Length: 215
Image 1 (cartoon, rainbow, N blue to C red):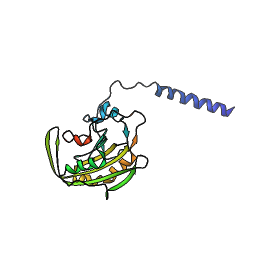
Image 2 (image 1 turned 60 degrees about the horizontal axis):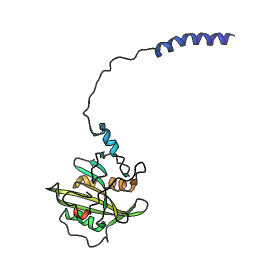
Image 3 (image 1 turned 30 degrees about the vertical axis):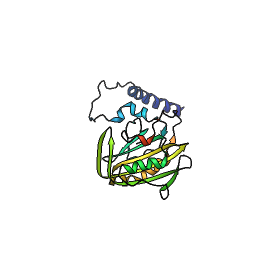
Image 4 (image 1 turned 60 degrees about the vertical axis):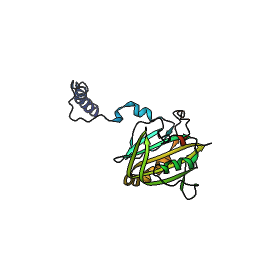
C-alpha cells in the first residue's frame, strides 16, 4: 500500500508539469539571426535536373549545376573547372578523342593503342585522354582561348556506337588535382532507373565543333 501511495504522489506531482510544458504557446514571431544569399540549390529545377538518364556518386568537392542539351550531368570544381557527362550518337571513340585533341591543336591519334583504360558501366572498356596546353575553340560562334589549360576525358562505347563521355576541363592545376575524383566518378556512373533515358541529340559529334556537341 505504501508503494502505491508513493507512486500516486509522484504522478500527481509530475503530471501538472508535463501538461504545463505541452500547453506552452509557440512564439508568434521568429527572429532571423543570420542571412545568406540564395544559390542554385534553392532552385527546385536543380534537383529535377538530377533525374537525367545517368547518375553517379558526386565527389564532395564538386558542385552540381544545371544540365544543358549536351551536358546530361553538369558539375563545377575549384575556381574554374567544369565536369560534364555527355551522350554522343555517332563519330566513334577515335573521332571524338581527336576532336578533343584538336581543341589543343595537337596531332590526331591514328588508333587507340597506348591509351589508359579502365572498366565502367558493367565491364565496358573506357578510354582516358590527358590534354594540357593552350585551349582553342569556338563556343557559340565566338573564339575562346585559354593558356595553361587542361582536359581529362573519358569515353566509353555503351552500345552500338552510342558513346558516354565524362570530360573535365579547366586550369591545369585544378584538373590535375581532380584526376582521382573524375575516374572514381566515371566508374560510379549508372543508368538512372527512375527515368527513361532522355532524348539525345542525333547530330554526328564530328560536326558539332561550333556549338560544343558532345562537350
